[in-house]
Image 1: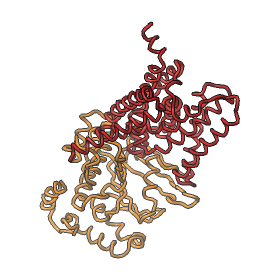
Image 2 (image 1 turned 90 degrees about the vertical axis):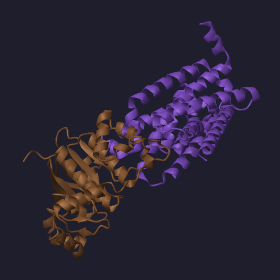
Image 3 (image 1 turned 60 degrees about the vertical axis):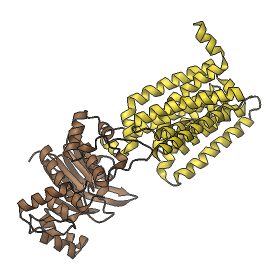
Length: 270
Length: 262
């Protein structure tokens, strides 16, 4: 169809469509990040994405694949390390988050023939969204949404009370692994829009905003998706009109929405 | 007797080579109420977790009857403040149909809380919600870890009473951990005093004379329980004191208490 083609020829529309696809899965996954107190964990995975990009060049695979591989490996390592409990989880995450980012930056600097826009990677780039990226985003989103729908009760139950869930026959460990894989996937596809440094913000700010208004987990997820849409649309428009970096603009919009909702809800209560 | 629901055969759980549960043998049948008592760190919770299959067993064996449905009432329901959840939604997460969930809530006396947020429930209401959730699964075995923690003394008595009634309704086995010695003694068939190994076990009346029990809990506790068991029909008043009363009067008195916590 020529109209859709025309829309996809425009880089702004590509970025917007891609961003909305990311928000679609950032909503539900962001809720799990907030519910399970995984904000720092998400940050660690996101920071390791840079290392994934370096790996992609080394073994010449698409960027997304390299990022997913590194995120999955790191997620598994984290799960294993946290079982030994030799270090507090936040210390461990702090070490790995920044080490992964630093190793990624150092490795990339050793590859002079690789021309990467580092700012774009770190903070997102409105211009970088290709048609291929859109395929990745919507393919990944479809996969994540299907998995979420299938595993919803088990995921929610093991978030509420892990032991109760296990007694009721829910495979808690396997679900945690699936959740990790979904995080890795969303980081790989969200990187283009908001950049590796700000992915966690896109996950948790809309979810936290939704928490103020929701009375049930499913409503909270739906609202988080809507607030994600608002952040992406507002942020990319801001970026387009004022030539600001895409990722920070999205996060600023999300934060403004957060303040607005909490302010209004606080006033309504008073 | 029919096949046991659960059999523990020399069950041993070690943490770092230190046995926390040491060679415990036990079987639970339908209709049994077994209470595990013991000092802090005696391995009570570990024992229960081994039965539930969420604690690795170092030695020995836990055998469950085939297709055994376990209803588990954990010690606490601590909900993350960021997770909004209504009583109804929490019940439905058991995967049981809405009518079952509602009748289970009514059975444990919290039917009116259907639309309330779990965050706003009192300690006693939360325990009754957890009990309702276990109940909705129509369990063969009910496993409770200190079900009356954070419940006032009146609520405790009626909670143990409810557990006994549920045992009668469902004809299930019950195994629970408790610190409320007096209340438990009245509500249980068999007491197991655990201190890593089974110090002693038997009916409440027998166990209060057992030297091992007296050694673990001290002479005054054992004596008070022994005295208690010579007056089977008395109850506790509001202050937890023992009140001697006939079975009729005790019952009406207790009915009155039942609503006191609202």
